[in-house]
Image (tube, rainbow, N blue to C red; front, side):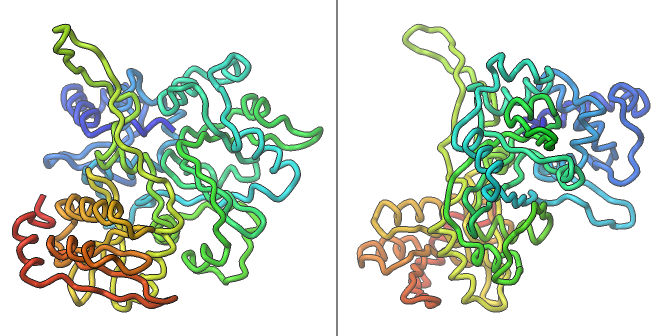
Length: 435
């Protein structure tokens, strides 16, 4: 909901306020009970994490997160603090309940009603800032929507009361797979999520005696696709003929398997990693000709939410690996495609869906950029392609100590290793994993 704009700086200011006021006065100011399940640890001191984030919200947005909204947001508070680089501790080494984005699987193209809703609020955006819709929004909901969607319109989806328990923990940055007709039909990223029956009924007027889709969420990103259920089932560990008859909200390793396996990259993850400007991030820039200052909004280059061709290539390659841990990591440069850790060392891989030279050069640049931020020093850099490269393209990669890997047949890949002296040279030059 309203945590996408909370930054490390705003959390630091909240901690300063806590230290100035003292714990009792601070908790009273923000209407939060003393910590029971988790503690934020900063410079040897312990803090109630939800109160800190409520206060950080004030520094980020100009107003604190109210207690009722904080109740809804509690599931994502810990994740935000950890993604911002803060330490959170749990008594008796308890495992945190939230450590990664959730994955929603939403049947959305089965009934005539769902298909109409798709047409109304997914095929097109909704101008929520217009009085026709805005009159049903609370001040806080309207402000949060404008923060993530400053243009005043967005795509929306929702859930009926029967899904309240599942939807209670859903937060900004979670991923939605919209399903129907034995395929994932679209991929979305949750923006603002709230419960508002009047607004929901304005978007999707219920039939007489029908249920309201009263839990509403906007989509920060939305891309259509045609991904067979069998491909998703393989990632999530379901039987190949599983048909997703009802809404699912997955978390933990299962959600990560789907999100990482599909190479889904959300704006929220990029913002929290420092790779994209936060919503409303305004910078002062000098206009030298006029010797004055003007305000502009900086926008980082867009990264695809979902690239099916690259995801399929990475999945096929991972299926050939044994005894290797495959993961991804977020950096200030973006989110890598594949980070392997096994008996042969650590390897960073960038996948491309095409073999032309611009794609080879893009893979080269991304590998050198991401490698600086690797969680541990990287032993090998590799670029993954769907077909063999031209010899001069292989030479370009090898010059920078990067292996070339390409698919030779279904389920088969060939590696063209870079000369070991070039590997050592680029490792020494760039210092992989030492940023």
